[in-house]
Image 1 (cartoon, rainbow, N blue to C red):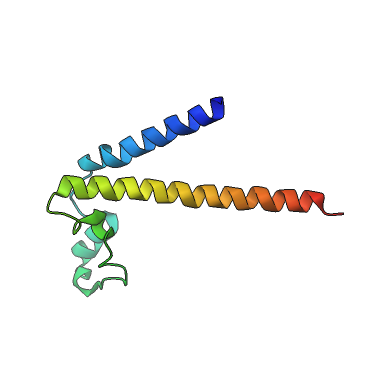
Image 2: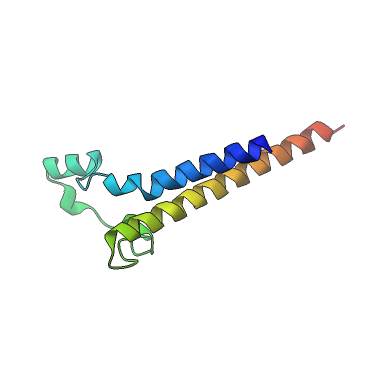
Length: 103
């Protein structure tokens, strides 16, 4: 029961950070983009294949509300990260059990 409670508290904190704290992220370019602009090769960049996906650029094309877009993208990203992590740990635990039962 205690493990479940700790997991739920961690999930809640992660979602609050992703939804609320992400709203205060800097709108300025990141380090790589800044250097590309400073060195004069930023205009050679091209979009990747998923640039038009719903959650690209913090979901900026989901609605007309930028706050809501960032909140939804953060929430979905947190749940997706949790699902991938859980799946990997589940597979590792399963393979460990199989290996320990081998003759």
